[in-house]
Amino acid sequence: MTDTKNARRNGSEQRIIREIRRSGALGRGELVRRTALPRSSVFAIVGDLVERGVLVETSRPGDARRGRGRPGALVSLDPAAGLIVGVDVGREATRLVVANAAHQIVAAGVSEEPAAEDAGACAVQIETLIHSVCAVDDIDLDALEAVGIGVYGLPEIHESATRSPRDLTSELSNRLEVPVALGNNTRLAALAEATWGAGRGVDDQVYVRWSVGVGGGCLVGGRLLVGANGAAGEIGHVCLDPNGPRCDCGGHGCLETLVGGPALLEICRQRGLDLRSLDDLVEAVQARIAVASDVVVQAARRLGVVLAGTVALLDPQRVIIGGELGQVGSLVLEAIHEKIDALSMPGLGRTVEVVRADLGMNDGALGAVAHVLRSRQPTTTAG
View (cartoon, rainbow, N blue to C red):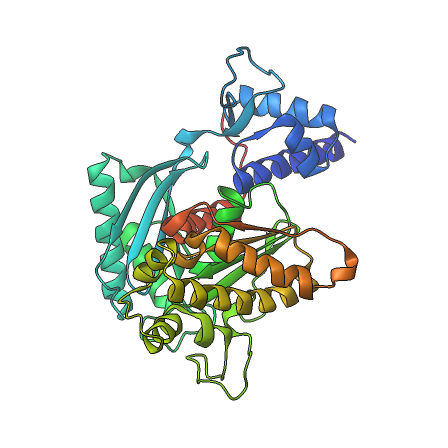
């Protein structure tokens, strides 16, 4: 009987730690809701974990009350438990963040140097960036426990690429002597928004990164969908026109070929507005230049049509729009929302929120950190 009780207790501890590792600092009441454990058990276990130093208490913003075990306090993993580095190897830049086990970001940096195609050379670039960022902020890499990497494309199946994902993780792991986890950077950005950003506290959500390309990630019941081939959430490769332009994925008329950054810049040029970059397009829309605004709104409606199908399939509570074009704000969000409302089972009467992402260009690197934190096994050995 004692062994059974201890096993049950250990299982409850692991569930609580896993949820805090997944979500960051939480109040005791929120832990009761998220773990579905009895309130008395949660309060007793959390108190014991705080006593043993596994968890630490922090005040909520604006909460001046003091005293151990106050119901309004937040609990998180001990920030001194180790460091995690998250890296986003993008098409045009490599971004990096350093976080601790309590989900606190302690440093960040970026390299504008294009990532090398050779796995070994790319690993050297990442290692150099890590050392550079940590040196600026006087961070001791002896505390490094793991590295997460986000890359574009489908790292789970693109082993034939020059920069093999398997070789990249192996090279970097050998150089840094810590575990390295890899994933698609857009899917990881969705995870970041669910952990720190516009999706925090929402179990069912769809994230879209609208940029040079169009990617996405979906969380159902708080879990990131990956799919059999790692392609779950690839909204940019939904076909809108089978006779349309050829896409890098091998298909034709994919959403990305019609509303991705290069396509929108070309449409603007055809209409007499010559813009050099996606940032220029965003600035033109924000300056209310008519051609730019019309091109982006029409593209947002196309994106909304595809998202209406996604909403019908997954029934999310919230749709989050990130990337440069997500920064446009209400002009884009309202056009997308209009199509979702009109085309996704309008008779159901449900409400789907369409909001702008919170985390900006560091979302992929933050997601790589979240990926590592969620995949680590719970431990209660402190104390």
